[in-house]
Amino acid sequence: MPAHKSNTFRNKPFPCYLCNCSYSSKSSLSSHEKKKHNENHLVPHFQYFSHISEGIINHFRAAFLQDVDSKLSFHRTTEGIKRFQWKFPESLFYFLFSSEPGFSYKPSIRRYYCIFKGKSGYKQIGIIFTCEVWGKKKNKLGSESFVLVEERDNNGMCIEKEIVFTWREKTIKKVKDEKSLYILCGILECILEVRRETVEIVDI
Image (tube, rainbow, N blue to C red; front, side, top):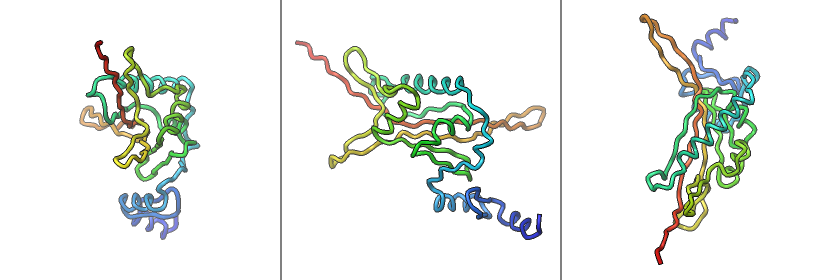
């Protein structure tokens, strides 16, 4: 490596993998990404992803549907923001969401995002997980618990709600015989909001 390139790397050891810029700190690189590549869809290392089997895909779909269904309760205390986490590989997130309009990737923190908005976003999630009623549940009395996709503000304007999927890498530290072992695992997360509508039973 030429001397000037070596010096540049030592002085600015945080390169942007989306352009030719380099920075002296991770915070500077993160600021650059936010300004220049805020909605980046490119994943520079995607060609190195391992094949995702149909079994793993179906396993995640089932886990997602079961976990969301478990939060669709009819008690008032179950309303609000819900957060779900699963341990799945990076390549699964890329396979499921990379073609979606709301997909983005931040190389400096190696984190993925995919945001679905409103009714159209809810419908698209149903297509991805092969279940169009994935976020709704009714009981025998007609009360309904559901994933909130839109609501009216104080002025009567319709506000689309977001359903957010993310992926990040987590490091687990294990110590044996005074030696540290670091294990990397992928965390796939979903954040959404649950509401309910109850039917009052009136005795006549």
